[in-house]
Length: 392
Image (cartoon, rainbow, N blue to C red; front, side):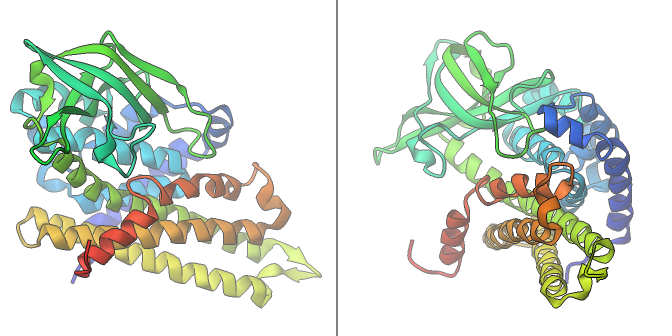
């Protein structure tokens, strides 16, 4: 059966120390200003966080790292702030992973060292204004013109796409039509600064204020033909595989959110007095926190089981089907638990929970997107049902 090793737990303490020293003292002002702390990213790179699933030849941890370690890092960053957690999650899962998995050796050598070191970030452009879960409705097109691809279209809600250190965004685009009439999708890497690649103004979001998120527009954007990622027409399969891994990472982020809420609300219930005694004495409070503790434990176990299965798959010991099923279950339960956790914590804090000076307010705003990004809760239920053998 799976369990976290002592090395994983030691690594957890390293990341926790980093988060509490580098993120916690600054996060309130960053959040209020919707400021993306570019200088924090290389520090995360120095700690090795972006290279946990990357071979040594590209600057990564090699055999010293694994997917479980990445989830530990995301959880611990997310425990302090969700925006910083998603910066790592998206930076690896959506930025590095597609290039590492499907890129040529030349593409890997060109992009991965800077991404692993934290000198650069990469994004993944899948979602469009009218194509989210329905990726088959993608309208962005890429037409081959000699030795170039000409890209036209728009993407929405793309993380890490407009920072000062963003180096490339991989976009899915229609490059033809399959025999059954469906769109043939391919993945194409578009370097930042390419003429015709327009980064729209940052979104004014409910939460994740510190995370970099933009819409992207491509207007006759020309990139070399060798920027195709993987084989032409394989983009649909590629992004499905990318999302499977991303769901486990988002689940880890949700665990961090729920854990933070449990700690904050429990501490508050011990010290906040009403009618001459701590409010934690009241069953109306203590029972809610007991329920929250159960949810955190369940979410963590489901998340790290899925991460363990992912590492076992990498070792050739598990099937893709097992990992997909476990990822969907972990993502569904953990993200819904996180949303509930923020509601409970805010309620325990009472009126103070509605004040931005208390972290629970930030976690409350940040949590909802967890049920939406990397596949909505409804999509996860659909995938779980299919995993049970029910008709599609």
